[in-house]
Image (cartoon, rainbow, N blue to C red):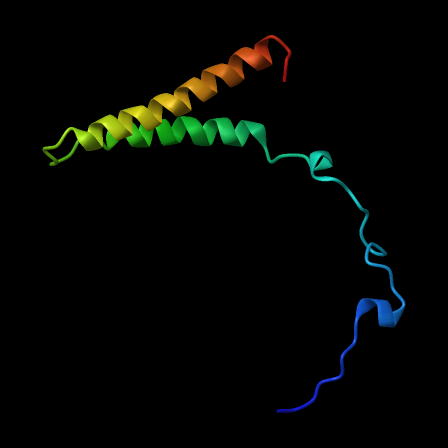
Length: 87
């Protein structure tokens, strides 16, 4: 097995954050909120269209409706918070 030279950033004399500013996770901006709302609405529509099909059991229907309902509640909550200026 060949013996590779072991070099570290400390051995090179460069600091870890030399080229990049140090930030905390809460300083990072989230993605585009409008795109997330549109994506949630499209997902709700797609989940509800999956109710149309050739399955006989109701378990799939319950899960599809429940997940779509949770997404709808999240969208309504987001809309209320934005309307009241809390977000």
